[in-house]
Picture (cartoon, rainbow, N blue to C red):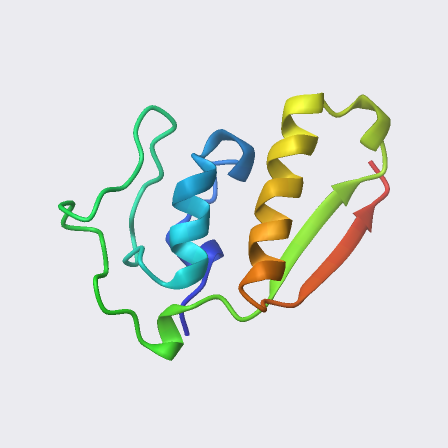
Length: 102
């Protein structure tokens, strides 16, 4: 089962990743174990680019964890999150939002 969470290392925050890489991951183009690089996007020539993703490589549900202190989030983080959510919507990927107390 492919997932963005599996492709993304636990210590990397999605807001630090290139949003284009996140979109590629949702489509299944990012191989397992790929380390997102905030300085450069994944290209088709990269060995971690999956040219022919299977159904199992694709994201089936986008889970968004929203901190309870959303008022303290930076505008850039909110904008990037919204762009990723809209891209998921356009791909027909359902979304679940979880609001945390912090």
